[in-house]
Image (cartoon, rainbow, N blue to C red; front, side):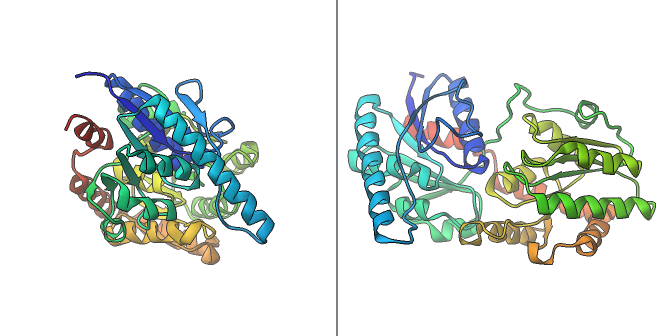
Length: 365
């Protein structure tokens, strides 16, 4: 099939950037030309600039405390729209794929005005404002939750979320994954992380809860990613002093290994994380980020709880006892198996319709 040009509108946190880059990687491997456009791509810590061509355009939220600031943000949006419009005219993409957040807003606005077809991808249960606004103009809205389909306008399709894996590994055995982290396949493996930005409150409380488990004779091992702002040596020393086998890092590029090694996970409930829980069918304890826009992480957690694949706990109730109680439940073999099965069933419901296949079907219609 002839090469097509795809423009990906994305920016912001890892929850937006990792699925966007996973899609780009899949489309490039299929022989297409892929280019990124969005706000702050030149400084985004989650964007692998050496792997993809990109254009940084201006954009902004409209949240403002005064008229002067509001006018400045409007000018920034206008500047970004004009830049995006002329870039689209020059690049001439066959299709645009938007991943939400204000970082993609000016690109989607320019695609709408220039008449270029675009796909909206929304992996959160409650769609963000940008995707809600532009969904009515999209040729297709790809979602993973029924709740999302009820909110967005226009045509919808269920699609599995692309998984970003920096390595070329498409799959890895549990034994190989555990060996990668220096662990053995003899104990329940708990994966702990706070999302692409980490979370100090999770680090402190979860470590205490896991140490308490060990003091009660419950044998576990831990893979813990602390985030960039926490010293992993401090966390590692706490586990090692209690005799808990562990692998502790700030961050992990090869998340396929982490998910393949894990029996359960404790983490935030951003869109990308929830999607990975489903993909790898890992029973979860979710702690939604309380300041997420429109409380969307709590809605994600609630959807996964309804499916039967996760428990969740609001951060205001987070303490050693509450996490300890949930860990006690999820470490029960029967409960763990039931949650794993529920996640597999939901993954089957999403089917084999990957986002890259959805995009290609539109390209060759």
